[in-house]
Structure formats: structure tokens, C-alpha cells
Image (tube, rainbow, N blue to C red):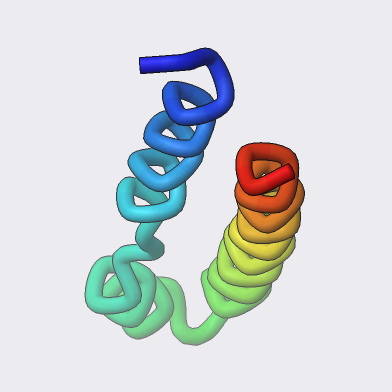
Length: 67
């Protein structure tokens, strides 16, 4: 397996592994009377930004591998 293919496999695994536990955040929001919603939004936004960054990097690696 060459270096680019290895990097692609690692990024794909990272994308699959990043999931926000919405049920947990909902329960914490209910327990804290809504105060946890701010944290929930920040975690979700951060995860979304990171996932988009990884997908962009993955596209670049695919192109690099095909050239």
C-alpha cells in the first residue's frame, strides 16, 4: 500500500469515527434546563467543520493518487 492510499484509509476511518452523541446532549440539555444546548451547538459545529476539512483533504488525496 503506497503512502497516499494509506493516508486515504486513515482519513476515511477518522470521518467514520467522528460522531456526535445527540441523545446524550439532549438528555444533558433536559437535565440542565437548556443550558447545555450552547455546548451541544458548539460540539456539533466543531465536528461539522472538522468533517468538512477531512473530506476536502480526502478529495485532494484522491486527485493526487489519480495523477
